[in-house]
Length: 294
Image (cartoon, rainbow, N blue to C red; front, side, top):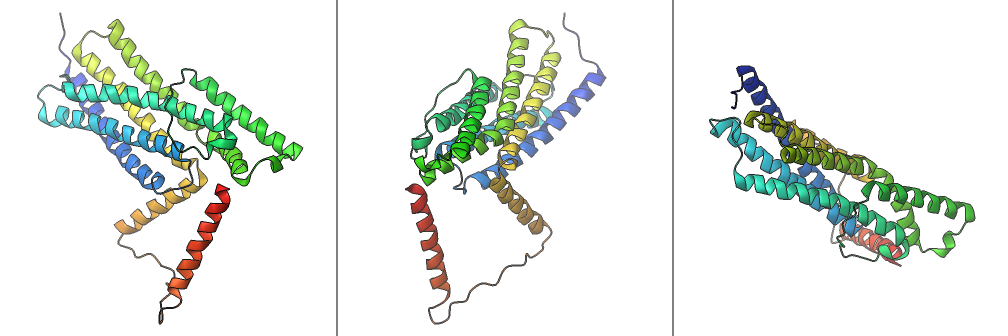
């Protein structure tokens, strides 16, 4: 016979759902900032950039879907512990599985970037594979990249690589280190999802309100992990971090109605000056791009 939750349980559940909604909104804001930083950049390989953007959009859908559930539960529902809409539940289930699979794809992308150093920078297609030995792969990638980089420095064998290939090796070492928090976060996200499935499969909780509260706690933890993953992607990459801080500064100045000090702008006089400088800058970057692609 099912027991009714006490008033203390109702207060706790309402507080928990409210905090979870705030967390979801905060993570949603982080995903928008992340997209604003990653989408314009050309510093990342196209494959890695595509995976990170897809991961951010997936997180955006995940927390957005959960936010809709919470708003309906807190405002429009008379039963705080009633199951969410089946469509919203189906979307969350699919997105959760897809998000975790995408984390494995990120492992595999770094694996191919490591073993195909000499040709990977010319590959612009996204290959989707699932690696079930995630933690082992990233540990081997980091060790292999470090060994290769150190051997190149010791043996002075860099003349065997083009500029682009040497850049790719150095970038693999840095990227593997920068993505370590992301990989750890993906592992924790998989763990929280597995705990949810274990609880449902073995029916460890009997009452509806117990299942609802437990589910909310696990989803809240997963949302926090997703937010940390999105933040570490940009905070552990020096140039992306600089772009992110610049974006935050612009937003802060906009809120305070402050006018940033802008550098002097070249004024075109009689058709000279401004256009010439722009053409020289454009040609300079075209030359650098051609040099990297050789």
